[in-house]
Figure 1: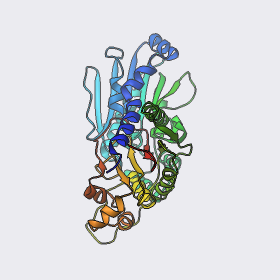
Figure 2 (figure 1 turned 180 degrees about the horizontal axis):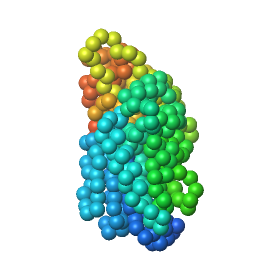
Figure 3 (figure 1 turned 60 degrees about the vertical axis):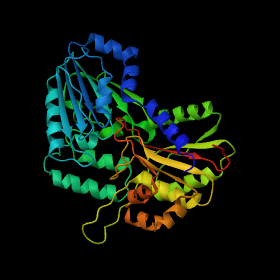
Length: 385
């Protein structure tokens, strides 16, 4: 397929810019943070989310008294003295998520006035820390969030519901301690609003706390833009964030790609949604996610052109698929037709991984250790590669 090497390079450039370990190290040079760490009697480190391991690795050993790290299953665990690790469930919470939340409450309650807890929060924390409020069962909470998510709800709406049902979200965890809190956020939400990342478990407001966004989707876009310029290309960073229904957004992005000038590459970021429908038949499972559906939507528009596109998630996992995303270009539908594949049928079933897998066009990275939403990179039809 045309353009895979360049599209992959743009993705890697964006990914490198949001490396969680380097992001935390940069943040620790902030004068206000350094002063609070220096003045604290005891220092704790709490890390939670898909990027928890990498963010924790950015903290110098010996710079804290105790640490608790909560990671998703399959993401690997850090090790060291004074460190407790909890492995919990993602994307839906289970009993391990409840156990992790209880451990977090105990951890926070052990620190007193004059102490400081350095909180490292990234996307995925909403599922990893789950402690329903009294009167709400875990099964009920899972059901209500699942229904809202399948209806294509925004992250704002999902987090409002999660917070209303939780004892730890919306600052609930932070209120369990008298210690000063410094929260470093790797943002996976529109507008980089810290209170929405992981449903803001440590953001209790006031009391001398500090909050810093240390990594975001925009930083990745800027890095990809700079990489393209160094290659002598003309990058166009799309002002409008990726949003709305995935396949339809793919069609819009595809039309933008077709209008790129000579040497033009399109760079876009954000997060779309997939509105799931009930499966027909029994024993069938969906494999796919929003970036694969965006790619199929784009394929309809790019058909027959010389443009090429990559849509991929920064965390390395698109929904229920094993891939980060997929490549598509003007030959995608023709090649699929020769194999008896239908883009329309794959979208209707929300079962998109087999389509791209058969074409050899999946981007499989494994978990990247970071999480700042999705990116789309496109090469215009007039750009020679």
